[in-house]
Length: 94
Image (cartoon, rainbow, N blue to C red):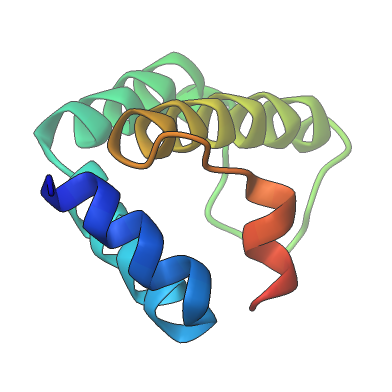
């Protein structure tokens, strides 16, 4: 039996193992490519951000773009590592 099928069979029976498998994949996803994605985003917007406690309204679209970019990247990578991965299902076991 291949390891992916074994992982799927085991994690379907044990939600804690499913959680651990996803977290393990997240560690793999946070690689150099992910860091470059974040660095490029920051390079695009760093001049608009200030190091203060105030959250300006102009930050909202920047924040929303960042969240969309990161969520898409993470979800795509999780789908590559765990076929059939579903973020909504994962959040129910959190």
